[in-house]
Image 1 (cartoon, one colour):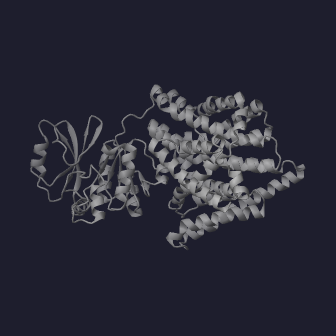
Image 2 (cartoon, rainbow, N blue to C red):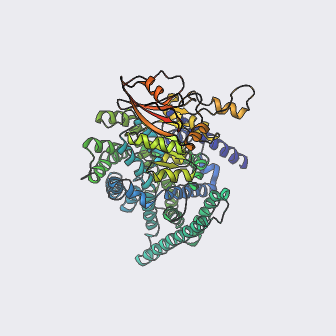
Image 3 (tube, helix red, strand yellow):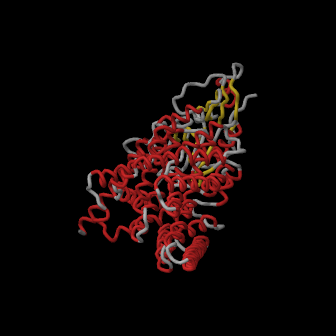
Amino acid sequence: MLEQITAMLALLGVLSLFCQWLGWRLRLPAILPLLLCGLLLGPMLDFLDPDVIFGDLLFPIISLGVAVILFEGALTLNFKEISEHGGMVTRLVTLGTLITWACISVATHYLLGFDALMAILFGALVVVTGPTVIVPMLRSVRPKTELASILRWEGIIIDPIGAILAVLVFEYIVVAAEPTTHVLYALATMLSAGLGLGVISGYLVGLMLRNNLLPHYLRNTAVLTLMLAVFVGSNMLQEEAGLLSVTVMGIWLANMKGVEISDILEFKETLTVLLISALFILLAARLNADALLSLGWQGLALLAVVMLVARPLSIWCCGAGTSLSSADKWFLSWVAPRGIVAAAISSLFAIKLESEGVAGAELIVPLVFLIIIGTVVVQSLTAGQWAKRLGVTGGSSQGLLIFGASQFSRALAKTLMSKGVTVLLADNNWDNIRLARMDNIPVYFGHPASEHAENHMNMNGIGRVLVMSPYRQLNPLVSFYFQDVFGVSKVYGLNSGDSVNGSSSARHQFSGAYLKRLCLFGEGVSYSKLANLMAKGATIKSTNLTENFDHAMFVNKYGETAIPLIYLQAGKVKVISAGDAPLTHGVELISLIPFDAKVVS
């Protein structure tokens, strides 16, 4: 049995990795391959039965996995960001959540015969969308910037809000069978333990991080370990209080002043593949095919209510009085796929409720998975055509993501922004990011090829990437990542400045060969050359090339040392690289003029 468990854990790891890769390769939410894999191994082939293989270990595995999911989601709930990303987002995660919750709860009660409390619990479980399913869909559909921003931030913020609703309803159901005085006492005790321990632990961990009491390499591991300890300790102190504690703990850390948590969120990248992805396969494999089929037309009718009634009603009520057009609202009404949070929490709650003998608990998981399958599959296949029909696609994205917020990058970004070009600077160096923020340049602090960046970095309007950082080990990774996102022709990089021949080291050979469009701004232009010119007083200049002042006259005026960078023509942005044809008139040329350049008046 031990060998069987070991083999199955290894298989789950390999399958999780494969499904994540397949989702990335096909530009689909990873939840789809994971779901199909679990259904294939479980209900269809009867190869994987988690209850038989893991036995009593299954519940702890699911419990810890759900705790990690809720904690990570809570870390993204910064209250300042709710107001910073527009009134529509604020309305969607408040009024919109209540409308969706009410519609689904009522429909579940009348269509499937759930009692009131179970219907309310189910409604709370499926109000969440989530960035892991929204972001891949937006990347494929490419709607207008405003719409993409609304959907992305709704998915990020609503995860912990929906989780808290579900946890509170579940805790009430657990104690509802007791006499009224006992119910109130048990619920008050549970809330006090969950909220109290969550606040205390969040505050203490925040102090530990703010005062740098841990070495940097232990921060992520320590926070994850302490979070799991709080989860277990809270459950020991008061049964069922653990999920509430870790959610409150994460929210407290996200909003505590002076606590930097961006690097802590990185732990989710590994856990997504090794834990959460495997967890989702296990959950799908536990599905009872007969229970899923037994939902019949009532299940499909509930799916229709979720997609065609609850979501449109929420969008139109929340969108009243905003600048959104009717086409914008109809598009938002169609895009609201459910994801891993709903699946994980529903499976955990179903196990607990079934053990308590609560009627209807066995239908919770099949019904949640029906909603997940329906929303993800149908909306992934149709959202692109729907956006085109409504005329809300963003068109050709002319904006630039620049990796490396150096002095040169900041100067170039300011010039481009003054011309109406969307620019985003990304860097791991906080000092560079701070200086860019002082210049009011949009920034992302961290690794732009990370999963955190995929969910939080605002790529709306961005269509090309300039890799201009001094980090030789990261540059190839960033380049390869965005070549897959935008295509090879949309990613540019500076010459490394090293010889790439047989005598070069393997590392330098890799650095020089990683990008076909390596020679950004020309063969002789490297990061060190740009930094040296800026240090000596070089400036970014914009020049209109006309019939009376063409490129040859530009060279004659500023000399051969002037470096053409980018030109603008009829609303299009053209990045200059080695081998490009000579410039003609009718363009606005942005170039770097050295301080000692020859200037002929």
